[in-house]
Amino acid sequence: MADEREEISEPERDEDEEQGSGRTAMILVAVAIVVAVFSISYGLQTLQWIASHQWARQNAWLYETPKPIASSDASGTTAPASAPAAELPAAAKGKKSDAQPRGTDLTEYGYIMNVPWTSKMKENPSAGGAEFRFSTGQVVIFGDPDAQLDTVHILRDTPGEQYLSYAPLFSTGLIQTNYDLYKAAYNATPLQVTPFTNYDTAQRSRVLLLTKLSIGFDLAKPIYSFDFGNNRGFQFGDPASGPVALHVFDPHDKHLRFIFLVAYGSGGQITQADINQAVQSLVPVEATYGKNKESQ
Image (cartoon, rainbow, N blue to C red):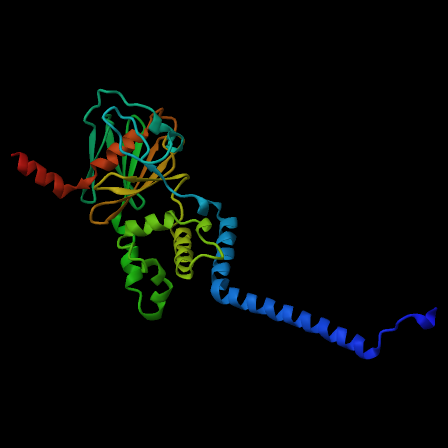
């Protein structure tokens, strides 16, 4: 029976092996072409995507974006601009008394703001600013405006090739002011970058995330945003649970920093409506002189 079995000749076996090797080579070439095309089209975006998620593993707050706060209405209730009430600071959900006193004017660094507290107040020097301390426990620290960098103009004035690192920030024309820069940076998250993101968009997102890391959080999380017309900016922290830091940008894009806190053991209170009143009332001293002259 062995003699009757059909045997495969050497030439046929070699031909089959050559065909198998040819198919393998074609598959490898096809894979190499796909990888090359992907690398050329999406390779850098993929690297950006990997890098952004690596940063987020070390700084989880990169996923956080500002939650909007609207101005207080006549009753003192604060409502979100476009977010559910649960996303607001806890103190924003309460109401102030309908009978609101005129409050106290705080003047420093060429600005004046009105806060609702009327107890005895003392102004003290503070590291990098001025401290206003009320006998009822409320404390406001007004940071020196000169300590805040004019970041946008610094970046735009960066000479030659050094500017190229920051060029993606301004590629869309949406960043014209320091407020624009902070808004874009704080609203950037690693989720906005994928391996299939447009290259220019991925580059801009990368620089925005690096900017977000650079400017960081101030005092506490979460972060909120506000736009009260003349004054816009960002709030860090909830007054119901601790100190609050605010970065305010006036109509001339002047960057101002404030801290609102309650002295330990005083029993005092600061509400979100109190903070809103202060920020909305903030104007250059010259503006109040103009109003006084018009009223005479």
